[in-house]
Length: 368
Image (cartoon, rainbow, N blue to C red; front, side, top):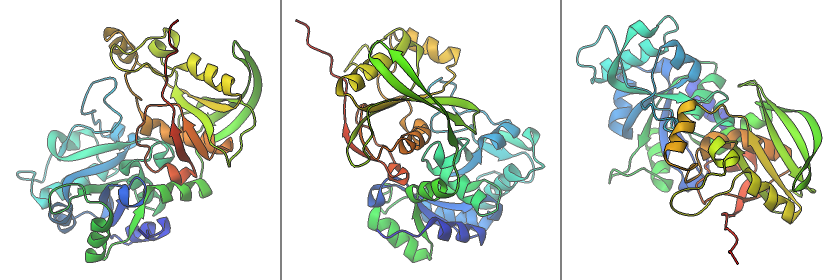
């Protein structure tokens, strides 16, 4: 599928027009209808509801969610990765709240810089999505991309978005999305291309220092990266010479107390990679990169894992860590990855000029 460039999407949003945004790789990705929130009126809201037909959401930055006093949809310590907040309604100026005019009014109140927590009530008929700081450089999601595109268009970093459904009510993909865009005269672009655009013009991390460290698995080169958005330091432990043309053994993770310090195992299913096992595997092969992402574990997250008697049973937040980890891997010269992980979809990874050549699950050695 031939996609329009990020600049074409940015210009369309600047003019107040909707665009179609695809995640994943070309025809395999889901499509969302996106329009800058500043231009949303009752006609625009009705177009989203009638033509796209998916759940209508409002992408907001984390800063704006805090300013409005929005709460997460779930209190689960591991349930915030999608960024859903409790639904909202304008406190005044609406009737039932469900009409196109009422929902447009709610959107305008939510993005008005003068609005605060008292101007909205919950629950309502607009579903806010919290975009991570750093946008698509942190997570390659629709909410982050929508806010990034609006910001790059010189508008408030907020956008209305809705999933595009096909005639059977399933997520539209490939030719169906292209036909939708052509029918309505809309540009269609991908999150991977937006990531690449931002890499060329912006960055959210910078290599700040390098060291040698001796471990029980031998010596590693440690590169420190300062994260400008979170003001934290991430680390890359590197062994051997990285060849961009060859698949490289890679692990990207945040350090977790139960998994990495207590060596907790899942009660069911396969065992998993942890810090110790990852270092050992890279040392055994003589070449690879282990990226350790800074993460402040909440007390609830640790207690939740301990109550289940284990660390996480599957990759905890692949999309949340994708952007930062991918920037670090790209800086290290990695292009093809032998990813130490369960097989999971890593959407928009090509925007960082990376590809997954192979998933390498952990296989426990056979006991004698």
